[in-house]
Length: 109
Length: 317
Image 1 (cartoon, rainbow over the protein chains, first blue to last red):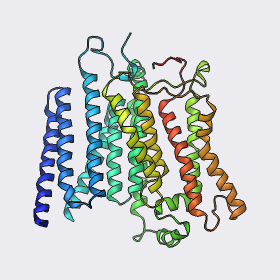
Image 2 (tube, chains in turn cyan, yellow):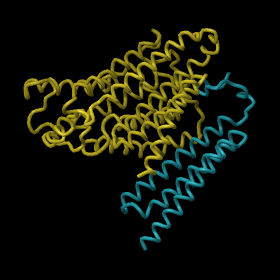
Image 3 (cartoon, rainbow over the protein chains, first blue to last red):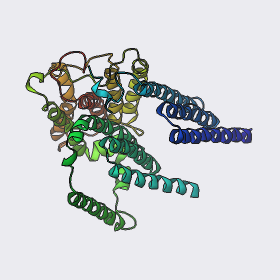
Image 4 (cartoon, chains in turn brown, orange):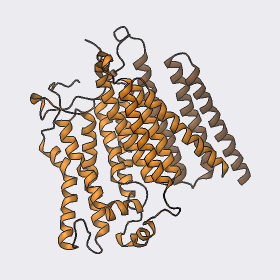
């Protein structure tokens, strides 16, 4: 039983690492911001999810496991939000095309 | 064992590479991004060294809050830098600065390398007497028991720092509201985040404060999380930044420092020295200082991020 759980952990964490690797490759190689965001958020969601899933059998139930799941959910929430905001910021809009790099300044009137 | 060593070596090389990249970055914005990532990696080093308290402070204050302040500064400087492209320091000055920095690094390295092999330490003496303070986290014990004057200064100094930021305001704006941070996009994902995250963030902040007596955590880490939640709500436009002339706000800002100083002065009568705690009262007094300081620190850190008040009293930035 312990062997099966350890095997489960190794497989899940390795799969998670593969997703992180693929996400990093995509972040470096994809042609534009939106596709790079896609690669990045996949690494966060699936990669971290698989790592957390793999670590679940290794920690104390329930507090340790719930903390791990909370970390994953918070990372999901933050990743999804930042992905949305960055996507909205780079989406070509007629008024902001070619504008400066400081979004805090707001669009020109 | 060797796997851990390999990870440490990779971490050290990453930090060195990132540090060089940050220094060499031609744009202020890029350098700040490098600095933030650098701080997070340094936090990992502190975790590897077993100093989780320092790691949390580095991630929250050194990387997160300082990074945000620098990002704001970079955004404000961008138009100036573009206009003053020729005003950059010449190669001679840059070489001099670089040489001085190398001298500082070499001096620090020489000091560290010349330490006697069992480095002189007071750690056993502290560990022996930690029980009399009643706190189980040695970092909190040292910071509020043995080095309380340092801690007092580094918390009180934030009040003049905030006054200095406010002093940048123009006369008509004095006492007004700081500019709303961030772009206003009603109904965006940011609004959702600002509505869902703060309950958890506030819980985590209070947890960090409460656990600080016995485990890694404490007032500064908790206050940064609380301040982040407040600024998040302001960024999403769900609340307006407060008017800085408000009496309750100003009392909140100085409350932590006042209570800390009052407890320190009472030590002169009750225990014979400034910031000495009477027998048996050490833990309650340390807890009182931490609990009162946390909201003050959170408000100060948030206001530092918001910057000076602006003349434009409208809802927009």
